[in-house]
View (cartoon, rainbow, N blue to C red):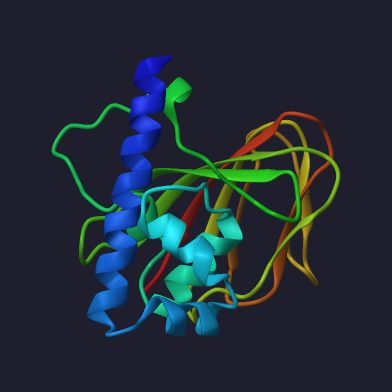
Length: 189
């Protein structure tokens, strides 16, 4: 158990370093980042101190404001060999729905894919604003049942079903059964 807590603390410290570094590289104060993102200055200070547990929406908001890919906040460094045990995953939770994602693999510089494991539970639908122009999402449903996709063309997926869509339009994820999981690959130009 201590090992897991140490890993979580390590991830918080890594996020803190990346967040502060990217903010300073943009020559932004915490106050200006707070104003741009609509996030509380105190929350940003806590994140830069390696405290707190940012939601998925917070991570996306910060990445957009800093003009970086969200993967840089999840996984700031790459390692030659990496084993990720399911019991040790760091998960970002949505503030508005019972929806969490875990970055499983990020692409090295110049590559164009990020791989996530998503866990969804019935209840509120996770609505996603359009991502950057040209962003494509690939979804493979692993367990359960979910309605996924662009707002005007969502589909019900069953285990093993695969879907691809342009993610630069509003889209959503809705679990139709408990313990629904999926693999999401974000692809960009």
